[in-house]
Length: 325
Image (cartoon, one colour):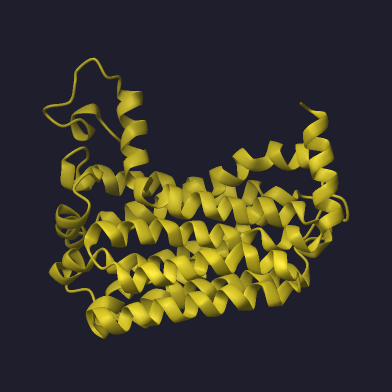
């Protein structure tokens, strides 16, 4: 059964020489474009550094750099496929299409690359496919919980109901993505340790108290949609304080969790202060978009901390890397 037909995906001005496969690939990418660098890549880095940290987060006492790198595409596939289901589910709603006409007109539905009916068919195929991937890669628990959170966030209107509930669902989703990616990269022979799950919970809390920085740049579209996002409900001044202060606190709390000393704080605190300072000082749309990207980079600094906790593992990984070149 063909889920997507060429006349449903290609708009009238699409170059006829572009193949259907290329068009489908571009369309799927556009669904996740805004989240790939700021969500999928940081989540994969969380798992990559966590796996290389060995006994800090997993039951593997001596992880192999080459085997970890070999599993990176699988982890990215798990993260991206679940992200694709979330984004398609989120963007197909009529209110979301109207919002994206203002905030993100390049997305497939507002730009006319795909119809609502074809999007529905994508989900009919995509959800079972993603569940099967979760089973194959032994992260079916996270995949099932993610689909439940996606249903609550999109179809039950959790994203519009209240900004606290919205933050909570996004944060829980982030933790589940991170846990799934860590399972895949650690491999089937090893498990996430108790410390590893504690780290996932801490990262979930970090997301809960800081991720509404993403909503500051989207106020105009959210207001059009009637969404009760944090910037709309708290006002511009208060919402910026509600982001800046937790970022500084998390920049201190996460190194303390691992007890990594000065190097840990050097990885998190300077960037955290930069993001917090920009959030308060620069308030135009262009600046807010850059600050949001810097926030994503700051989270990557947090994710390096488990590796800093195990310098012996880090030294071995470096020796392995240098021996290859």
